[in-house]
Image (tube, rainbow, N blue to C red; front, top):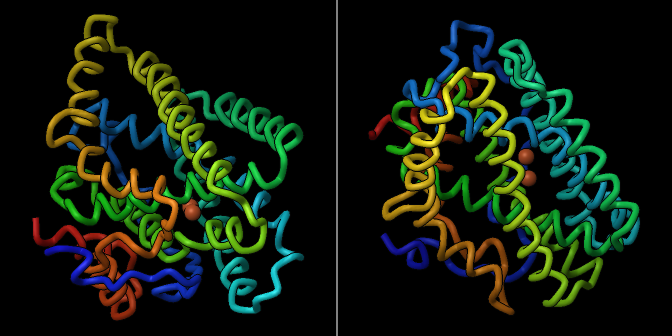
Length: 299
Ligand SMILES: [Fe+2]
Ligand SMILES: [Fe+2]
């Protein structure tokens, strides 16, 4: 279905859906989850694990960058959205920290990864104007929301993943969709950032984010004990899985490029069928695990 036919364009800051901070969800992550939880595939597993190690510090950075402008927000609706955005992101950081403790027990140097991310992000906040930090946040929020939309569009991508970890990522994706326009609206309407700042920040994030993820994956695959030859083969196959024809990122390209349009707004894109399905099951059962499975039930 053409998403444009399903979703009328929205150019105001009105959220299409309510931003609902959800807490104390149980994904059963203490259960017996295999080390390579993504269908036994080390590369795919470590791709998502690496992102998870970046989330707690990243989410703290996003919250701080939006908070810098909170006192200047005059619109009570946007003020409330900012509060809900911060509560959602704080919860994401907490859940991923718990998940990352599992990675630490496997020998992953989560402590070092977090210390490096923290010093880099703090350095950026000291050196760069607050508006540019916020522009980075809005760019990263666009990335996370198009990934969420992309994964929901293609549930088959996650078919082999452990349902518990998948449910954690699906919940995170649901909330990324709900608050996807908040940082952007603050950037445009409150910080009054221009086109160049917005686009420059997106180029920066586009370059830096995969570089960090790949560096962390390199460390993870080493401590997993794979030989240099095995790792080379994994990278060759894995990069095709990410960027090759039919790869994970390819269908997201159009939504990614939309960010460079002068009249862009986050609520102009993204299908909401899987989101609605998740919400319906979650509201009925109270189970994030059941809701995550429901999104992938048609695989
Ligand atoms: Fe998040
Ligand atoms: Fe977010």
